[in-house]
Structure formats: structure tokens, C-alpha cells
Image 1 (cartoon, rainbow, N blue to C red):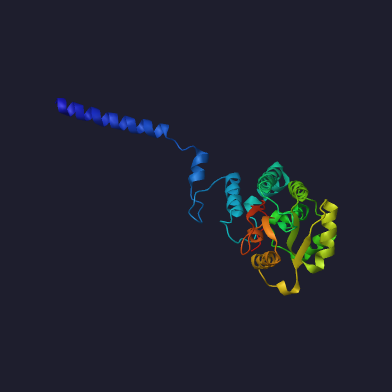
Image 2: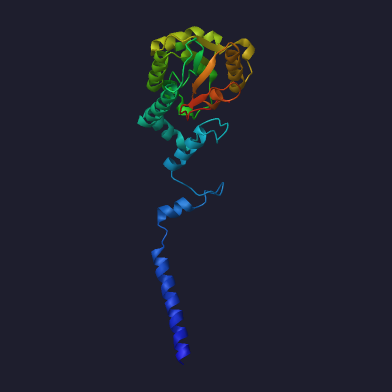
Length: 264
């Protein structure tokens, strides 16, 4: 009888513990929703702010590869990021890292110590344009963007202007390498001057012979030509991985943030 009593006591304790555990380990409604399947990919749902922050991370690290537009759920996030303090702070951080490296470079003094800058969303901000075009949620419209370029009203990115001026003062030769075309040379020069940039050594734009080339190939070829001319490319600043990768890469490359679009 004693064994039966002990057995019954163990059963009661087991039931009690189970009940207590279930009452303690409750998945509160919001958490339950976060862990639920999204019904499409089978992945758990996460709040927009976390989802979009992670999406931007994959974009900036190039893990996302080629994509065509900002996800609909992240348009507000991208707008807030690009027009708020976070984008400015990130750009300043890139400029600080660039300058810290530049201070370690021993310049030869022969005028061949080069630093390359991209232009769009590296030196000049296209945020005013994308404010009217969905912050990357719309398919790129080349005609409307070319009209924006012709207006020559893009403001400088403050962090990049600061870096540009300091590199110039330290004796680097500044070379601008952009995906814009030769027909946009005058507007580009005017815009750069309006934004506060000056004294670049060379402004390289796409020629007719570059039509159809990817940005990576086009910019690699131009960097190789510079190297063949004797330039030492110490640094390269761009908002796209295609500004920085390929052949004849700089000794150090610096990626500026851009979650609005990608160029291969």
C-alpha cells in the first residue's frame, strides 16, 4: 500500500509541475505572432523595424546581391534612415575611417598618389530626387533621373565634402570616376562646383565605347588605365560595391551607405 501511495504522489507532483510550467512559460500574444509562420516562406515574422534593419545590413554587405527595389514594408524605414541622423552618422564614420587611413599613407610628392571618388551618392546626394520617387520603391526611370542630373542641384554629402577637402590638403590627387555619361559633363562639373568641390585632377565619365558595360567592368578598366599611367590608387570611395571591386582595386576601399538602389 505504501508503494501505491508513493506512486500516486509522484503522479500528482508530475501533473502539478506540468501545470505550473505551462502557466509560467506562456508565449505572450505579440511573441506568438512573431514566431508564427508568414504563410509564404515559412520563416518567422518579425517587426518591420527589425526586418528592415536586417535587410539593409544584407544590402550594405552585398549579401543581398542584385535587387530591383526597396521592399514595400521598408520604404518608411529607408526614408527615415536617409533623411535622419543615422545616415549622416554612418557617412561621418566612413569619412573618419578613410581619413585615419589616409594619414598613414606616405605620399611620394610626384602627383601620382591618387584617391578616387564616385559621384552620385558618394560626393553628391540624390536624396532630393528620391524624395519624389519613392525612396527606391519605384523602378529606376533613367529619363527622369537624367533630367535631375541636368538640373545640377544635388547637394554635397557633408561628410564626403569634409573628407575631400582634407585629402586635398594632405596632397592626394583627386580623381572622379562616375557612371554618368560624357553628355552630362557640363552639368556634372557645375553641380560639383555648386556643392563646394574643386581642384579634381580628372573627371572620368562613360564614353560611347563604354555603352553596355557593367559598372564593375567599366570602372575596373578606367582604374587599370590610371595604373598604367603611373598612378598609385591609395583609396577609393563609393556607395556601390561596383565602384570598389573588380580589377586594379585601391589599396583601401571605403563603402558609403546606400539602401536605395544597387548598380552591378
